[in-house]
Length: 282
Image (cartoon, rainbow, N blue to C red; front, side, top):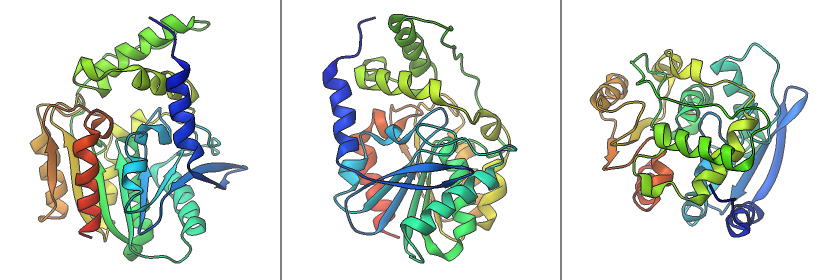
């Protein structure tokens, strides 16, 4: 498999360069935040084994209407690993502390969490109470439902770049992206960069009921966006919809046809206006 091109690296670095950066406390270290645009705050929490780059195809488009904030979650990406034990409530408190610094005493916050970010997002929204207007769950588990198994591989120690990218391609196909044609060089670069930096293991939160515990405490409007072919949920998306609506009967549950788990990347052209509409309606 060919090496990642300088053009792809430059694209990611260019999106990052357009952002303002902020460090907020995380144990003895820090959480790294990126901000784009102006307007009502829209906080995007990425998935497990990821970083803010899970939102690479969304932040600039959404920043036309919102003040987009995308942290690297504790122990992921550039952010420091907090002390053990790692709990959903404790990790969420670190994010809430960052929000209090980035948006002090501000209300009308909009929150969206992808996968593991949605699990933590439920606890963030619960802790922030009335300050959050809308909370959008994007392809998250942690609802006490069966999570479909996925055949993921590890990169062997000392692997060459070609083998690393081959493993990244396999894992993207197994878990993240439904259409093989959408597994492009940018997706490979993001996956191969993010996964080795994961120091907080998120899968155990998604396999339990960490999000389900938080949802009854959330005061914000609750909605969901899933890819139709989400490998962690297909063909049981109706159970996810039922879980959200058991808490909020009026919750929107939007399914993007043909898209997989990483729906905001694979179907960004449909996801971006949908999330903007949901948050804007709040």
